[in-house]
Length: 272
Image (cartoon, rainbow, N blue to C red; front, side):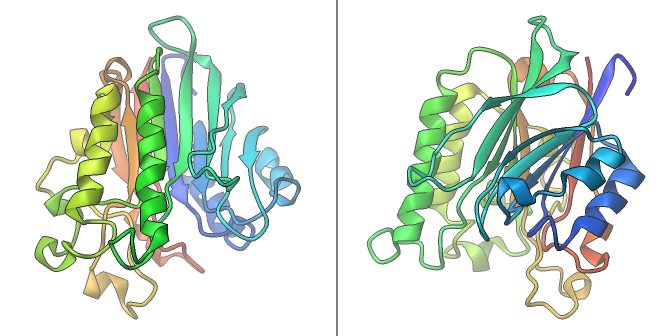
């Protein structure tokens, strides 16, 4: 890493042990300084520390559980675990925050990177008939309360499970009543955004209404021809940190790799 720049990546990997080969491929090809993974689906002692350390990613903060959910952040620059929040309020492993000790920002402190996996919310967008939908909204509400109290430049990345803009989905009209793009979810996410004046880095660099997806269902036999994607994965930053972002890109081709995740990686670069 050059002393005046840093690259951060995020990827819902949908089982890190099953898809370790494509994680390694991504790290070889892109070499981000930091990689945030969601849905690792393993306990902390099962995480593949050794193969990633062998690639130079010797620092890790892992919040896992058996079989489901789980998040992990690995880095090739010094970092320390900074926070764990139970925004689900039931003990599920859906968040871990780190401080990047060598990535000094305007305050002179290390950059904070929060890694989150927001619940999908089930199939029915009604908390009365689908408790999972209510849990998703409540999760975002707790995140919003947290965001109101942030006192230093921070980045939050991960699978938000919401595609907020019309250009973030293959069909705005057909998905208005589908969980991940309903007006209620979009409004709830917007309240979270306003709580800290977050800047959506993806849309700073890939401007609306340009097509921008990060997820395609496994149900489509040919995801590329079908192209019914949604932008569920996000990288947001505090305003002062966002001003230092100099690039953002996606690896859409990763959706075609061997045993792929249904999500693709996102990468943002900063000048520090």
